[in-house]
Amino acid sequence: MLRASDFETAARDRLDPVHTDFIAGGARDEITVRANEEAFRRLRLVPRVLRGRPVRSLDVTLFGGRARMPLLLSPTAFHKLLDPQGEVATARAAAAAGAIMIVSMASTVAVGEVADAARAAAEDGAAPPLWFQLYLQPDRDITETLVRRAADAGCSALVVTVDSPVLGANERNRRNAFHDLPAGLRCENLVDLRDGESGHVRQIAMSAEFSWEHITWLRSITRLPVLLKGVLHPEDARLAVRHGVGGLLVSNHGGRQLDTVPATLEALPAIVEAVAGRIPVLLDGGIRRGTDAVKALALGARAVGVGRPVMWALAQGGEKGVRRLLELLREELSDAVALCGAAALDELTPDLVRPAWSGPL
Ligand code: FNR
Image 1 (tube, rainbow, N blue to C red):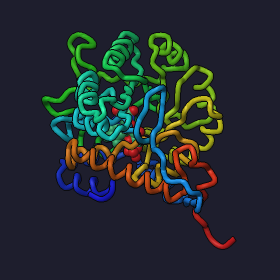
Image 2: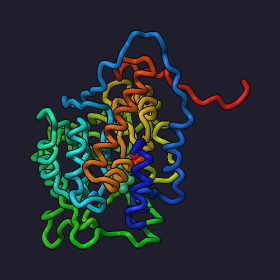
Image 3: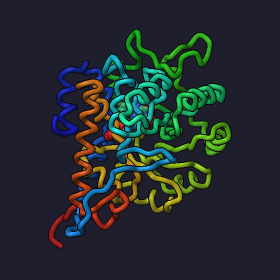
């Protein structure tokens, strides 16, 4: 395995094609799925030279927690579909790499157990932060229980996914009639939330009723910082700051919600401008190489998330696969930072990035 895409190739050989479709797929024509990756290819890096600056550190501090690289594991559902240890394997690999993991509300291992695994695997005893991804639920008691479970597990931030008033239509899943986990697997965070229903994915309610008031309410029931995942419009970024949100994850859900929205890299500059440094801005969608990460960081993201690559790596090689993926991405990132002539992440600035030349001037 030499690069992120190798894991996908290997995983496709092993996986049930229905699960391959679940991972790879997106909404409708998958225009945004492709756009995310293409946007990185359309940008060029313009390095500085002779700056006498070896790379000092790739560390990043977010909400008081330190990570050894600015690469997050974005929240993705159902890891036990891909490896018997599921999110335990992913968390161990993330902890060993010093990377922040965002545990999906739809994980197949309970968040408390994921956190225990991360702590046990952290090499220097200090586990990197673990965050919890939440879909607000119409029943406030259920949301409160989920928040309590995440806080009790030691999660240090809540990432509320706000791009899903309804579930995006993935036509591959429809064709494959993939709506459910196989027997024996459950969404463990949803167990015992309500009588008679236990861990079924259908328990995750999507609702278009949510508004900024619900974010204010959520902030009132927890001391954890609340981030919003899925903001693409700069006006929403301004509203988020006004509502005391702790950070933004610029995301289009990997092209799985509304098709034809912009690539996240295209959306980033306007969000960074709207936020004006008041809260950290993160990005996910289409990150496959260290150079992709550097481009997003140069344009103002404090860290970037990866979704599908982690799932392919987990399917290919379990914990070891994810470890190897994170090692490779770290190496690529470090290389790219050095080749740009920067010593640390805050030296990655917008002047290092420009659009690809599109023809004679
Ligand atoms: C996701 N994503 C996601 N997001 C979320 O907030 N909660 C979730 O449970 C999931 N589940 C999920 C499953 C699968 C199979 C995929 C591919 C994605 C979206 C994810 O967090 C992230 O935004 C994208 O995956 C990032 O894009 P890339 O890195 O996959 O291109």
